[in-house]
Image (cartoon, rainbow, N blue to C red; front, side, top):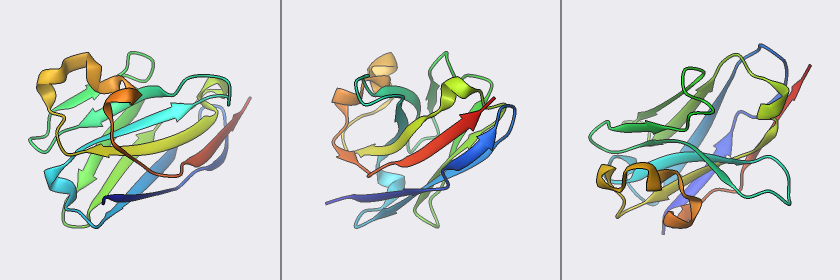
Length: 129
C-alpha cells in the first residue's frame, strides 16, 4: 500500500511562498499519478489543485494556475508543490494523493478528489494578510 507523508506547511504572509513536499513510500512514485489537493475548512469539500502523471502531463485548477507549480523527483520518490504569491484564501490543509490507475485521459476529472485512492495526512498552510 502506498504511503504518503506531506511536509513543508507553515505560516506565511500574503505574497509569500512555500514549497510543500510529499514523500512516497512502499511504491515507486514514477509509476503513479500524483496530485495535490486542499481543504480550506472542515465543512468544505476537498479541492483539486494540480496533478502530474508519469509521462510529465500536468493539470492545474484555474484557481492556482500561474501561481502554483507541481513537480516530482522520481529518484527521491518525492512530489512537490511550489506555491508563490500566496493569498489568505490559500489558507487550508494541503494533501498529497496518489493513484495507480488514473492517467491524463481523465482530463479535468483528475481534479476530483473522489477519483483518488491513496492520501496523506495533510500539512497546514496559513497565509496572513
